[in-house]
Every structure is written in structure tokens, then in C-alpha cells.
Length: 84
Image 1 (cartoon, rainbow, N blue to C red):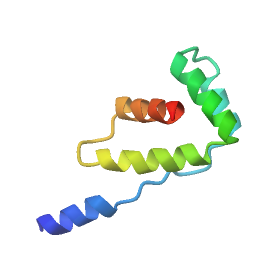
Image 2 (image 1 turned 135 degrees about the vertical axis):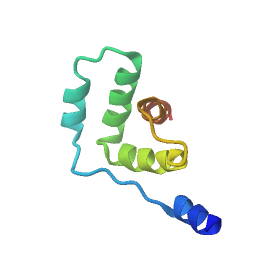
Image 3 (image 1 turned 90 degrees about the vertical axis):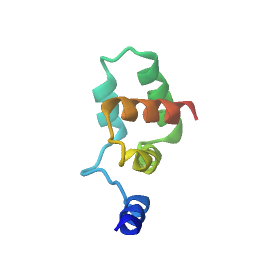
Image 4 (image 1 turned 120 degrees about the vertical axis):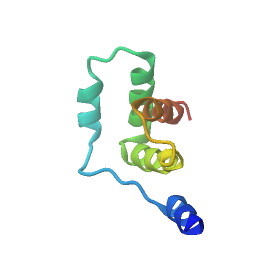
């Protein structure tokens, strides 16, 4: 059983339902004057969209499934993405 659980956790895939556009992210962050929000928008603008961010975020959050994915975990991963 432990081997099966380990296998399933190692091979789980995350995906985000629906489509998120750069304009939608921009609208969601419009009133957020934080450094993190500005850095993320700069990164997304340089990348010409959100596709790479969503793929990277899903891949990195996979490591947190056994511990639980919290809003703080997502924030940290988005910050790391924007700084990369």
C-alpha cells in the first residue's frame, strides 16, 4: 500500500480549470500595489502570457500535495516564479 501511495503522489498531476488570460490576471492584481504583484505582472508581460506560469505553478505545487497546498504556499511559488 505504501508503495502505491508513493507512486500516486509522485505521479499526480495538477491542472487549473478554465482558462486564465493575462488581462484577467491584470484585472485581479489591479488594486494590489505590492511588490510581489508588480514583479509578477512584469514577468508575465515579459513572458507574453500566463501559460508558463500556470505550468510552472502546477508542477511546483505538486511537491506540496502531501503537506497541503495553502494560500501561503501558492504565494511563495508565485513569488519564486516572478523572480526567476
